Image (cartoon, rainbow, N blue to C red; front, top):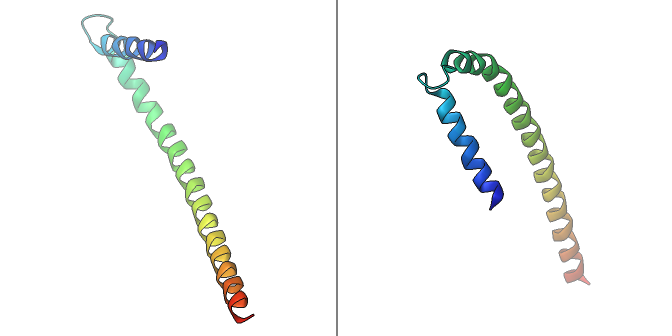
Length: 79
């Protein structure tokens, strides 16, 4: 519960900080977002690539296990 309250307080601070009348941080926030967006996009892209590779490996391993199980089932039927 405490974490939720802290999260709400931080989100409220972000909203207040973006209002130009209160702190006047609007231009700095926009500048930060312009600079951070490409870096964030690169990290998200790398994570997506790693997840995709892991998914392909998992699918390949699942097919091998399925084929092995099918082979074992056929051998047990023929005995």
